[in-house]
Structure formats: structure tokens, C-alpha cells
Length: 529
Image (cartoon, rainbow, N blue to C red; front, side, top):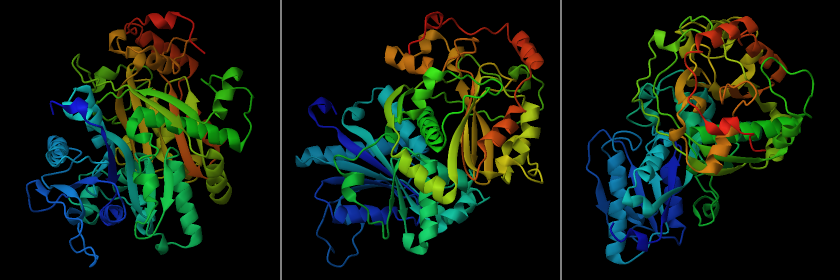
């Protein structure tokens, strides 16, 4: 790798999807019908432990018989010692080095690498591995770049998988090596963490079901391009070609959140003109900023704090100190800020709104407030009504009986400000039958200035989330809701009941006055427009 700077960078496409969705069929379709020089890494998590091996390239063997394997058609590394998103990350990058060494020895150049994930692989995790390798300055990263991410979905089983209550480990048919993560949670991650969502096996759906599925996929991931196909036969140039357009591959979870917020805001603006009525509690409304909602553009420099705490939903009074409830953060906790620069053009929102909203009533909106939630009221007034069977925040309690506007929600996600912690940014995640609130790290306001990114453009994007009037920094409620027949007004009212009242907010400020945010000189300046 000493001469890495003399070589062209090889783009990498990550291919995800459950076992049986059509990943290998798509890969074989690519290899049999492209003029590009492709190198493959196949993460086959098998019961029998087989060492990674390099297989000779032979594009002609058995071509006419139509029974070619990936290794018959391209230089291929097979990984079988675990999942690329966790136990064999180092082996994954070693495999790229092996392919590059082979190319150097042969004096040839790869046009693209394709990483075929195992059925239960978490694409977000693997994407983070690439970001970490860049941050660590690994020489390999001067020769490869994660370029695009594609997820292939079994259209015929989507509804059953989305409604599933079982963990991945109980579904070996989706891929071996699964954990206790709910099937629906992984399915949604694979769709949301993709530049291209490929709905395969559409012959198993009627026309109405297909249009509904396309609407759902577009709503779950408005940053992606959605394809439909049979036998995994898609436009190869658009997905694997040199001009394939990508965005999600270069973001992290916060970058995806910004894109989702921009898309939902744009779609809401198209659905109805902005109402300039009296704002709800904690709502900021700046007429000058309304124009931003018409922009299908998101400029992201995102960070990711890697904590693994989960909010167990303890009954805490307003303003209670988070550290008293077993969630202490040591001084050495891993922030792992990832500052990723991405231009989030939301794709054809007018078309998506027409298809998804007008035909199937699927809409999205963003709930934004600048007050924290009271944990107990949030559980009683909101979380108990979520239409899920697995609710980590309720510690096993069944959902409330009766009607609630929030029961129309299909998917919701975003950042939360909770009154029992002044520093922690929580993440709300609901998909299908599963809901959880997790610790996503600290608010930028609570992070020392010397840990912020150094580039001013990145800092400006972060500062755009700050509240300069009340001094709460970037603390906020910012949750994207996607659903069929939703009432934004009714859902917002229900959520508003869980916000702190004025007296409770005074107590919150009193409790945390001994925990001031670190000084940030830029906060004393007039924010840039």
C-alpha cells in the first residue's frame, strides 16, 4: 500500500437485503451483463467456518449453462467467519487489500468493488466502519471509497416482515447469525440506509399493492431512488455505473435525520400552505425561515456520538438529574464525532407526495418544539398509545386500548430532549411493531468547543440547530412522523401534553443551573443567515 497515492480510487457499492431477497441474483445479473471490471466480497455467514479465500477469475466457465456462481464471474473474496458489520470488520478491509494486491500483480484496474452483505448485516454499522477507517488514516482508504449503498427487498414478504414481532435470531430464513434485534427494525434500517431501494419479485403483488409499497419505500427513505423489478433485473448503469448518484453512503445517522427532516418539511409545504396561526408551546416560528421549507436541499455536516445506553423509562419527575438513575457518563466516554459533508437533495418530492399521499394517504411531517418532555407524562399520554407490541420504553406494558391519533403512524424517528437529562440527546425510533428510545450522545451545546469540527462551514450547519433566544443550544424535539391518514394537528396536540409546563420548566432550570454548557464563543455572535 506504499504507492497508494499513485492509484485511482475504486468505488465500493454495498449491497444489503435479507436472505432470499435477491442479492446474489442481482450480483450475478451485474457480472453477466457489464463491461466493467468488478471485484466482489461476499459476506456469507455459514454454519461451517470457512476461511476467507481468493478465487480465480474465470468469466467464461459455464456461462452458456446459466449456472455461474459469483466466483465464476469475478475476482471474489468469501467471508464466512462472521458478519462484516461486527465480528470481522478487520477481515473485511483485509479482503479489499487482497483484491487490490491481485489487481496490482496483474496490472489491471478495477472499475468497482461490490460488497454483498449477509442477510442480517446492519448497513449503518458497516458504513460507520468505513468512516472510522478514514478517521484513523488507514492507507487502504486512499484506494477505496464507499460510493453507493443498495438494498434489495423481497416485495412479497415485506408486509409480513414489517408486521413481525419476532427477533432476527428467530428467523434463520432471513440470514444466519442474527441477534435479538426485531426483524422490522433491521428491515427499516436496510431501506433507510440506502441510495437505491430495489423492490424485487414484484410479480407477487397486484398493481395496487405495488404502488402502495413504492409509496411506503419512498416515504421511509426520501433520499433514495426506488426501483421495481423481477428477477433482480434493474438498470445496471443507474445502480452500478460510473455516474450512479449517491448521498446516503456519505452520511451517518444524523445526516440521514437532516435529510428526512428536509424531505418531510418540503412534503408538508406541498401538502398545505404554511399556517401562521398562534404557535404551539415551545414552537419557534420565523417567517423568514418559512422559505427554507420550500427548498429540497439539505446541507449536512453530521456527527455521531456512540453511546449504547437505552432509556428504560423510569418514572422521573421533571428536571430530575439523569445521573441519579444509573445513566452516568464517565469523562472518557466515546464521543466519536463524525463530521460528514453531504448535499442532501431530496428527490422529486412533488412526485412522491402525489403517489404516496394522494393515492394512499401516506404523508409525513416534523414535530418541532423547544421544550423538554416530562418522562412520566410522555409514557402515559403518548407512548402507551403507540401501535406496537414491543415497546422498550413501557417495560413490557401492552399498548393502550381505544383510539389515539398516534395509532395511524407507520414510522417515526428523530431527536428528543428529555427533562431528566440536560446533556443527553435521545433518539426516538418506531417502526412497525417495535419502539425504543436510545441515548444518541450529547447535544452539541454540551460538548466542549475544542471537540467541535474545525471547519467553519461544518460549525455553521451545527449552529443552525441552536436556539439563540433562550440559550438551550441545539436541545429540541425534532421527530419525523410517517403514516397513513395522519392528523398532524391531533398528533402534535397529544405530544404537546407531555412537554414541561412553565412551573416545571422553572424547576428544570433550577436543577441544572450547576451544569452550565461549556463556553462557545460563536454563540455570543449574531448567527449567520
